[in-house]
Image 1 (tube, rainbow, N blue to C red):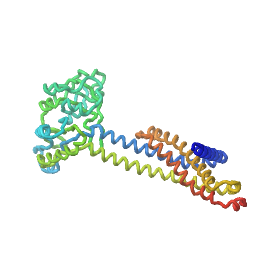
Image 2 (image 1 turned 180 degrees about the vertical axis):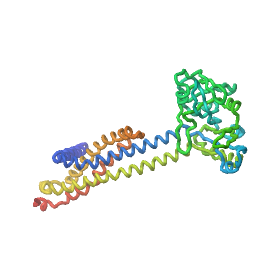
Image 3 (image 1 turned 135 degrees about the vertical axis):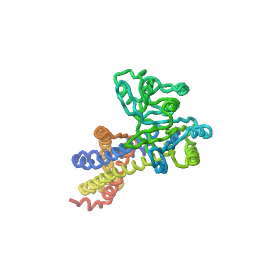
Image 4 (image 1 turned 45 degrees about the vertical axis):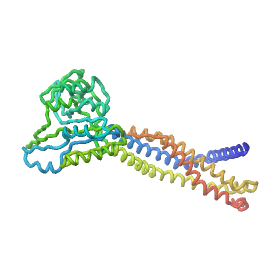
Amino acid sequence: MTRVPAVVLQALMRDVRLGFDCLLLHGLRSLLTMLGMVFGVASVIAMLAVGEGAGQEALEQIRQLGSDVIVATSVKAVNEEKRRQSVSMLSVYGITYADAQRLQQTLPDLKRLVPLKARREQAQAHGQVQDVRLVGTTADWFALVERPLLAGRRLADLDEQRASLVAVVSEQVARQLLPGTAVIGERIRIGGVYYEVVGVLRSQGQAAGAAKAPDQPDDIYIPLSTFRQRLGDLYMRRMAGSSIRERVELSQLLLQMHSESTVEAAAAALEGMFRRFHKQQDVQLHVPLALLRQAEKTQRTFNLVLGSIAAISLLVGGIGIMNIMLASVTERTREIGIRRAIGARRQEIVRQFLAETVVLSSCGGLIGLLVGLALPWAISRLTGLTTVVTWFSLLLALLISMALGVVFGLYPALRAARLDPIEALRYE
């Protein structure tokens, strides 16, 4: 019972050794034959690394808000834009405080609701002037949208209750508006009001699919109550000889649910509520969970396409191996005849040629793995693209190279085994 596997293992090791001997006997020819498999495996790994890197980067941007969050954004309706005929016309649109209160009271499974008002303003400090995005929000924003705190503190509930004149600035604003200062405790003037800087935050500010990240690199955060008292809901600016007058109560609502499983149902309820109370369709919903699922599906398709393109080079390498093995069968016809004459069976001939082919393709695959690991690194250094090499891609490329060795070596091996021993001995 234990002797049969040992005999099979010994025969297999003998065939592998013979395969290596044949490779070394024709070293240059073997190396040139392996190149097709080397570049094929390397291209599969490199392309999958590029696709995986691009996909993970996009998915990470979408995950910034979390899959349990729904984002409602105020947008100017098309009919509202057409209705405004004169410079004195006031545009009123977007999410209202009543909407936020209604959702807080009626939406089931709501964990956290974060209101946000945003407006472009000019900030001044120590003779420096910078255009910034002034954001009025609550302390919950910092709990929902987690960003590294570089110095000081975040906004607190007490700041909201007291309508304090405090601000948390982004790292970019701190560097450009308050260079060479301690930042914390400095005062920034916005719209004639001075705000004390109490914290410095690192912002992301990158697009995430169809939605955008809730923060931007030039953000300044103040309490929502302070925003309402000091700046109000009416916004007016002059441009190109005309003026724009708008009244928007809330720019955005971030709604976090207790469970990811209730997000889609909550999104449907939100859509129905806004359709009922906002006839002009001035609120747009973004559901990161839906974007995440779509992005994952797109990434799988993208990886499949890239892998299929790269697999063509593997196929070419396999054809090259088949071609060289057919030539090897022709060269070794007398050897095959001698082996058959002294008692070698057809399955042993098949096994020997298959072993040589698998050794050839496996060696090419292993070298291709090394090249494939170097290529993504070079691509990242030269182009700045994010590349991610996964164990799955390495194992897949190596297994495919070995499988191609069997597939493309089978016909030459069968052809060698079917040679007539007498005719083979006569071959010169």
